[in-house]
Length: 269
Length: 213
Image 1: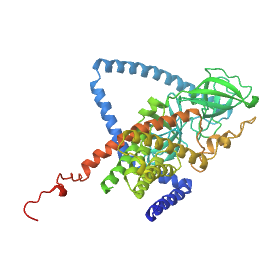
Image 2: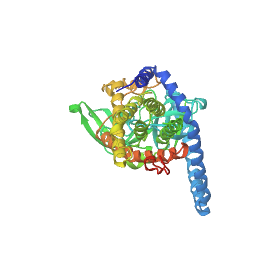
Image 3: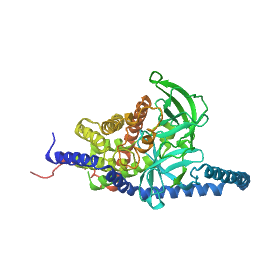
């Protein structure tokens, strides 16, 4: 049934698979970016065509709509400037009180804008690719967020792009807490009952006597060592007691809709 | 199979992997990304030699894994299985029939992701690595830190009933795509390859030879 060339072909492929699967993690990570580098021209082409379509859409937009949008943005800008002035005063007060108490000063985040250029093709992972890489100062474990809330963390970094693991992926655990009570801390894990709704995750390993209510806000606790405290994650949908009362678990609706994720911010070190 | 057809197969696989990563429409509408690589493997298995089938599977698998969180090389074996399975049974396929193409595509598009998931589950540890609750939550640094910096093993994905539905959607999408792949390559072959010589209407046994024998 199998002739010699066929046996050789199958054997070579099997050997190749065994060798590649047994390579050290760092090598495979680099190899992935080398092979993925072949796609850079296509990603560039897709980005250019998207911006062309967007520009064409802008030229077709009526002048009245643009003027109205500018007016809305001008008002929003003024409101934000007033808030910024207030926040600066609160920051100064916070710094002064922290120095009096001997607590380390908090510094403003340095953020870098990035665009989502692709998504993980496999249906069982939650990851996206962004257009910033090592040459833009990216490194593993940098926090990725949007104005709505936490997106995830950078997992692998190539020269011109990086892979971001999203919250809800099994490899992106997040130490979280309920912002109202601040004492109920747990871990964000993939949803066990989310169905096709990829905006649902589980907040698990909560203390069994946590006072959980739908609508409570969930944010990062900062106890995990990767994500700083205070980044919004989502809101509690419902909760249940697990393992005969050993711990509690809550379903959380994420603040960020991954289906509409196009622009993100990376928190630089 | 000509070298031009093999080259076209590799280019199609490359573009398909890119579109799978870049185009998000199926995921938004159906909730699952549809992969056309198994459909391409069905076509390759039916028309190409085994080494050519292996080449398409290796390139397609490596390209797919390079853009995914899958361990590199894990998608090769399932694609080989699809291509090889079709190759071995190619004499029993009515390859020009759309129905046969549909069912072969459905089987291939179901087998490939199921085998990939099985391999992922065999090679990756479970979530039991995440520690149980304790009073002071001092274990929490490991939750975010242990799986970072690319230094340790990745956790396997969580499975539930909706993953089964996603796999069925993938099978249906692949089934619908397979006849299209056949039409596409028929068209491309007509463009890039020499057209077959049309049979002559002359029949030697009907030749009337005049004169005496």
